[in-house]
Amino acid sequence: MAGSGMDITSTTRLLAVIGHPIAHSLSPRIHNSAFRAQSLDFVYVAFDVQPSALVTAVEGLRSLGFRGANVTVPHKQHVLKLMDELDPLAARVGAVNTVVNEEGRLLGHNTDVAGFSAALRGVLPQGAAGKRCLVAGAGGAARAVVAALAAEGANTVWVFNRTSARAEELCVAARQWGAALCEPVRTESLLEVGKQADIVINATSVGLDPTVKATPVPVDIFSSRQVVVDLVYGRAATEFVSQARARGAETIDGLDMLLMQAASSYTLWTGVQAPLDIMRSALVGTVN
Ligand code: ATR
Image 1 (cartoon, protein in one colour):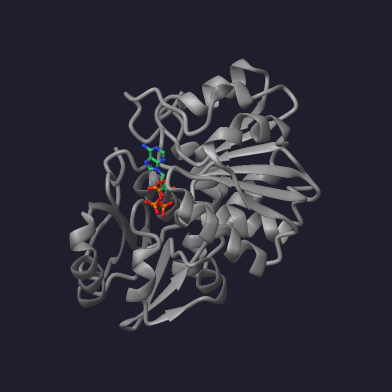
Image 2 (image 1 turned 90 degrees about the vertical axis):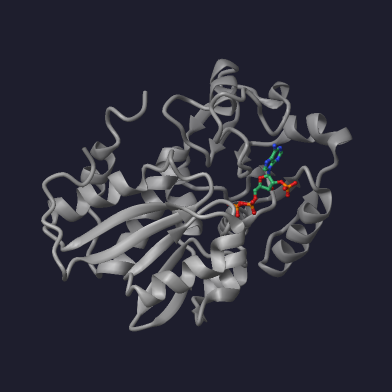
């Protein structure tokens, strides 16, 4: 059981993940297993925070002296303005997934960018350099992905989002980040454009609810020459990943990115290199 065997005392340092929904989160399991393995006096818990409670939840972290927090769907962009200071990358991306509390000052970081690049390199050692990429989504997670693709020198980044105005906004920002070519994609041309992509990424929250077998793009986009990345993870493969695999694509599921961004956050809070193998094995048995 996550948390068992830990001696929680009055000096134990506190960490949390805040999001909505949150019950599916594997972050407590990952971080607590690492704290145990490295004998660090920290404990990590999960809080279901509705959007209307975000401001008071963040104030709570500060007043209760939490060492920090992860921030997930749907708060990554809204939490930004609640920080006292922003890491330059988080400021550029416009999204925070990691908060560090330095004696009452809340510092916002974004470890999703490095997490995405590290996960992609597990399959593509050169990363996205020269590749044509389709990103589904335009929220905080998508902004981190597009920033990583721009930094890696992707040839083209297409952004498709249910609310097209957000895709357009993201492309304007991406051009400022140095993306060679970033274009919003309309529903009418999604199939045609998507088939040309070398890398297809789901950065929407579609798939978070495993009972809904939906994908954010038509599955006929997928082919065996693509790498398909889902930022969503679940106890079983998401519909997005299953459909891509069934069409021969190489896939990266959300667990890889979860682990990589978790490792960076861990180091920000503790100053210690994260034990990736321990973190990875903490997930064994939770997913298939
Ligand atoms: P995060 O910051 O974690 O990315 P977010 O800002 O709430 O969270 O973004 C969620 C993304 O998933 C958005 O791109 C959202 O599309 P909208 O901009 O149109 O809201 C997308 N999304 C959520 N539910 C969706 C659904 N049922 N179908 C398609 N896209 C969805």
